[in-house]
Image (cartoon, rainbow, N blue to C red):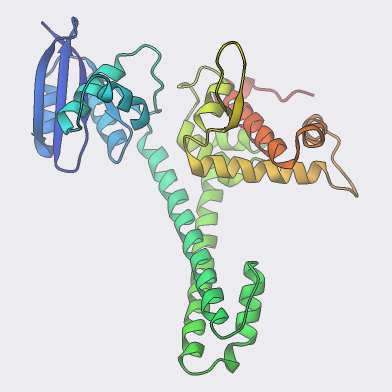
Length: 342
């Protein structure tokens, strides 16, 4: 019989392949396939459905398999685990490949959008910039920790740490002067690199029509717009805006039973970087809506104020972020046909 579904457990050098026919019977079981032999093995198969876990290199392999005429699907590892653990003990590469093969054939399986090379290159810019931001934060914390050993306690605000550390630099004894001076120089270097990557992101947003349309939404800037386009694409993998919001972990967890509905905290699944950008944008929207001197009076701001009054600040922030995620899906899915409500 013809192989119709294949599950591949990706790794660095040795891959596990598990293929089944239309009746679900294993026809291809290869627990040890070398990296340079994988493409040759898949090319020898008839067009079939290939499933993989979304991990390092998964998008590259998915693009290569689709060039050969196969249908590639990526899944989050947590959705594959139940199929591996059901009725079996232990974990190995062959069992993972069999579980992937079974999971990808499920009709309601949640899939990860396959990214193009352009999308991955744009996400590299975001990841590298975020890495520089984290290094700068670590440098500030290191300055605060070292100065506290000398009795100089500084607040958390970065500008204050920079100013106060520079003011007391000449009074520091011995090697402390050298160390704090080097750390301040490292912070300045990271500032320049972050500014450079901000310019790259601004260029990316300027060249993308989808990002330009996303920037028209409240709380969506260049960072969020380009990250959304690079991660989600045109939103075709999601049935509706709520599916995208749930994929980003912005919906409450459910603990419902016996007809009684119980909603818990937000799930915080999916892309944490994109979720954090949406939350920061939502905080800006709520700050503008609750500005005591001149609060905004548009429809979204009035709704945000009412949610904050009824449910509190942070619930309102998450609600705005979830709404923005739904609006982003509508903009990406409908393109130029999308029109903001009056």
